[in-house]
Image (cartoon, rainbow, N blue to C red; front, top):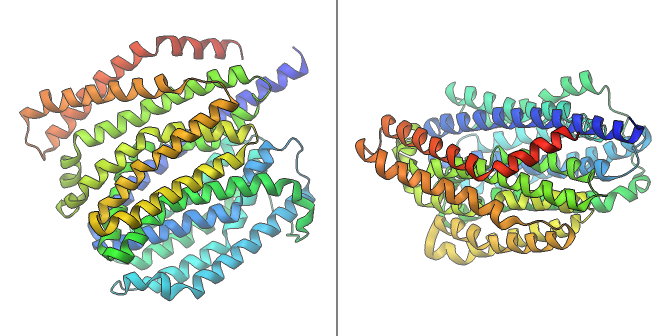
Length: 483
């Protein structure tokens, strides 16, 4: 076997192993996030649940800003970064973390202004500021692991922080710490990654601040980081914007609706990290890259459609039995946000393709478009529609996703329509029939109805999806046999 084939086989094995760990990580994160969401929804007031949205925003944006896209840049770049260059990257990330921590301390009164009735809100933000300082220690470890295609280990590292946060936040809420427990959970999650980095990667290099030495990484890294950040702000900051207009209670309801609506995308979000290294190694064969994109798009839509349609078919039962009656007012918003999730897998696949081909600027423009569409939509519609304006704005923003698909097809030839439509139509039919034919025999808000509709709908969908995907399964098996 030639060295080139040997290397490709090794890389494929690494990506496959990383995919398994990343999927396992996402499953653990999904279950722990759903669990902590249920605990907090029952233990915190609606306004206090809004503070959960604030802490989530800080956690997401701080990681993205500190990581600064260097992990993706190191994977996409042809040369392996030297320890000297890693030291400069570490210095850049540490500088960003210190600035962010200072901003959190200085802006604490403004951040907590909509939550003036929430006890210990400021103490929570101070704890978050301390936690931000520890973030660079984990981000530099992720860069080194992903550049070496040690995706299984990077997946484990990425799993530590959210799982620790969810576990500590749930324990704190059950112990009566309430909002301050969210800050403790953020700090614990940031510190928890340190032992793993020391074990699997070793001590990071001493930070250097000679930023000119990494200018070749800056352009791709900046676009990639800003696209991820803007994407996160689109979803995480809008509840706060609504809260400024409607009140802290609306922040809690919007945050809860978003938590439920994204259940269907938890598992597919893992591919936002896996697709870049996988597609990047197919750059020389755009035909195969397009074929792979079609297969991935189909299965991501299948997973998303199964969870989203299953949730909507029993949304009343899920809300009443699991979260509590006080959240039923937010059910219409859950339905609106779920409609917007139809094109989420397509945006993930297209972003992976464009980043792999070096077109991160296009992804950044799309992220700006999503942000502008949702923010403008919310600001225009919130006086008339209240918190439901967020759902309508998200649906309108899918026009940007259509534009992203068109731009991606100009770079890589693939056919997305069938891969999107088939799973959603199949899932919609199965769960509608299950809700009408099976659900009619049970009380609307009962565990029996929830289980019966979910099991029968999922079984019908499994049969249909196997019938629809016989050629896709054969293609996948052929790829495995070919290495």
